[in-house]
Image 1 (cartoon, one colour):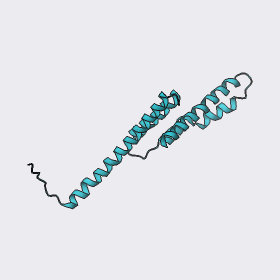
Image 2 (spheres, helix red, strand yellow):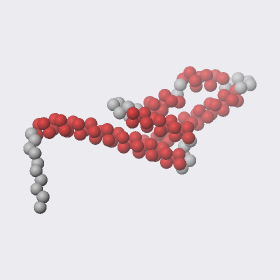
Image 3 (spheres, helix red, strand yellow):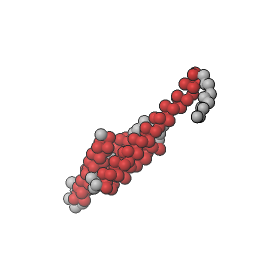
Image 4 (cartoon, helix red, strand yellow):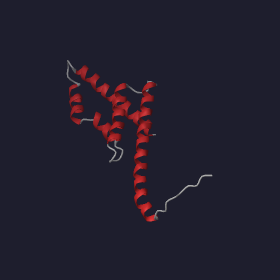
Amino acid sequence: MYIFYVRNKTPSSFDAQNLSVGKEKLIQEYRTRICMNLRGFYNNQYELNLTSGNALLILVHSVNWDIDHSSTSLNAWKFIKNSFYKETTIRYLLDHQNLPIIGKLFKKIVFGHISMVYDVTTTFMQGID
């Protein structure tokens, strides 16, 4: 037969110190698990050929960014949006796609950019869902 010895602690010292640290660690653990699940989902989508390699790089990088910046809320969408939406670049591409000689090249670049944005956003939304 085993006898366990339990030290008496005052309820106030137990609640004030250990519970607040426990909540913080629990939130950090939830955050890490959510990010790891998202990363696994994105890799699975890539292995099933449902997303491109460039989209996977952006999505995994956003998850890594969320893991590294644990003091803020999850901001994966802000990171993703900033990675492919630069107003000056898009304006430049759209303005030059109607040029006579190199317009076809700019049209291909615009099409590739739009398809990559679509791929990233649909995979991101599926992962959040």
